[in-house]
Amino acid sequence: MTDKIKGHFIHLMTSKYSHYLASKLYYFAPRDDQKAFLRSEVADQMQKLIMHAYASEVIEYIYC
Image (cartoon, rainbow, N blue to C red; front, side):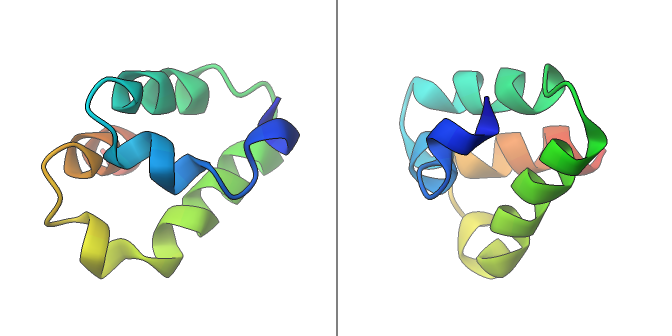
């Protein structure tokens, strides 16, 4: 599942309606290594994404 969106997760997080999809993608990721991969993609651009209106909701969901 996460193999198909490699490189697109950040775009999903920052779009108006697809940030809901990004949250559910993280929630329903079947394996822990897939969740770790998604967290690593976010960690690379954390400073930029934390100030974004939609991406900050996904970051809150992932880390809280």
